[in-house]
Length: 294
Ligand code: SAM
Image 1 (cartoon, rainbow, N blue to C red):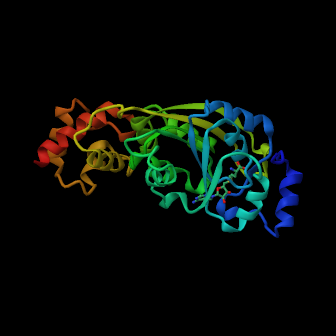
Image 2: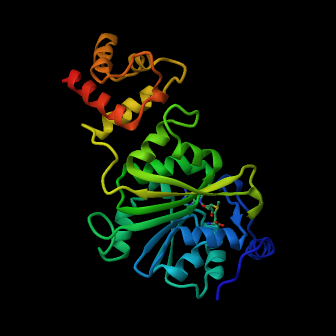
Image 3: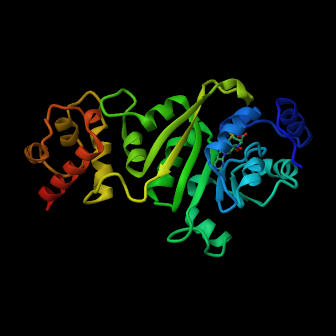
């Protein structure tokens, strides 16, 4: 059976393999079985599940996921960790470790290849779990969502402040392009807070575990997803500007008069700021801007 993880175990394994925790890769390992149990429970795993884990590290979650799910594909960027990980996971279940950078992986293609076409685009949905290195959180979430990978659920541990951004409502300080993308593709739920003391070494921030239940189809209909996200990004470009000025100062290709018309037609006051608009309002605005662009 694989070894239960603790600060002493992490220290000993790292030393034995001549490794040190790489801060640049966000290597803060989970060493608290209570939190690990809560993360595993949150994923509601069954033997039918295929789970992709990003950043297995020393396998604190990996072995436990494998105990419940049918199969685990774990993607780790740090080649140096792999021998230690393989020792920690000996006998833990059906786990395949893949060396790679999660930001560059086409996950549908990976699971398709690894499962002989059982999971992936247009086939079985799979789950994604990660105690994410903080430096890749937003780009990775965007990579997973914007590529429409065939995921049913994403369970991630993120910095507390990022969890607040994912679940933020219009008009709040935390609301922004990440909130809109996450809420367009998924139903996010902040599950529980995680104090920094459960990691070794300890990070400088507290964390939270978030469950993103991927919607069967996005929350609102948009004329063009690409244009929709361009408009959102432009609207949040300069937070202190009015929506009209942010849009006019962007490279969306219309003049001030036209944006004014599009806003009016959408029933949105041009003096509002981007951070007060809901998903539905951005969707209507996208349609009207596209109509004016012809
Ligand atoms: N899952 C382990 C745990 O909970 O103890 C380790 C979590 S640690 C916060 C993050 C892990 O992600 C590290 O093992 C790190 O090497 C790995 N990692 C960092 N950047 C990555 C990337 N771009 N792709 C895949 N793994 C990455």
